[in-house]
Length: 212
Image 1 (cartoon, rainbow, N blue to C red):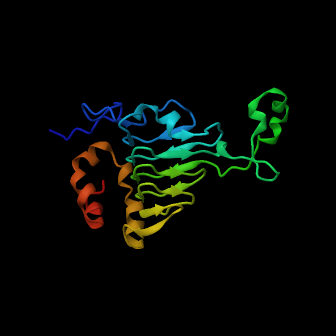
Image 2: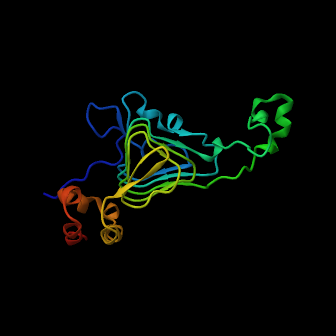
Image 3: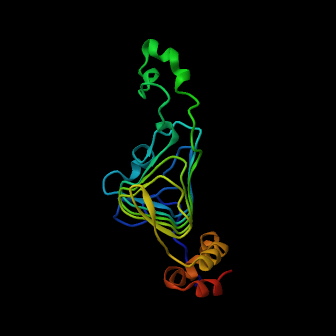
């Protein structure tokens, strides 16, 4: 019998654990794209990810998250809609309060943004991570608990702190290049299923040996 892949379409993949949700079947916003098997874990508000964890998302910038990402409780993405003007005496966004102030809405539209926020594949976020607008996080990265990510994160880097800085790379540069070329997260689900043990605990050479 051929190995059976896990179902990427169920909301709660762990029986009896409603705190863990797959994001792809949960997301409804056209401004958020999530790959298969990426999940969010939260004991209280897992299904409210779009409203509680993606903040100030008024568009047109997008949040893009790859496949097989693990997001700990409280992982938050601050989007470009959080920007305020900083070129005058006050940063307060008067026009959104309504009344005659709304006549000045042009003062807060078209503020400079950093573009889409992009998370690669197989990224692990510890609890209570904050990602600022327009950041790009590379494949295989690990973001330590409580980090505030304000700049791009290299592939397979471990980062931590506020602001988050590179602690070390998970692999030497040459092996990172090989891992990116192998891109196991793009393999067919059946092939991944057959080789889960190597993907989780093997060497780069062993991973290369089972590449389809």
